[in-house]
Amino acid sequence: MSHSITLACLWAITATVTAMLPSRDHHWRAAYLLIAAGIPILGWVTYENGPWVGLIVLAAGASILRWPLIYLWRWVRRKTVR
Image (cartoon, rainbow, N blue to C red; front, side):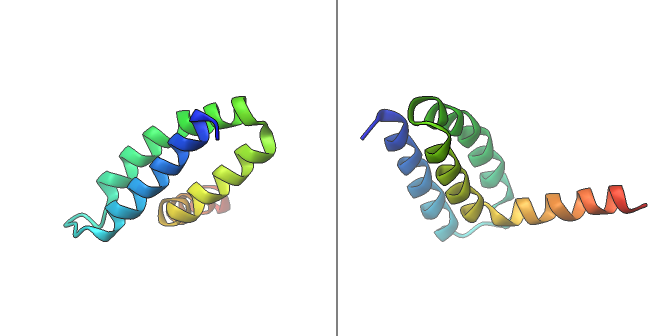
């Protein structure tokens, strides 16, 4: 297993453990940190293993961070519907 895939798996484990911990801000601070760390990891995985593996890792990250994506989608729709 390549180093980038190993790091992506560690990112997923960290995200899962973070979601299990109690939080006063509903995990938004952790989500911002996970997004900031996940984007370079996703680029590295895609560079080392190709676009198909990169898409799989992107789908896994999107399933973990689905609420920020839902809120982003709602914001974009509000801005473009006017």
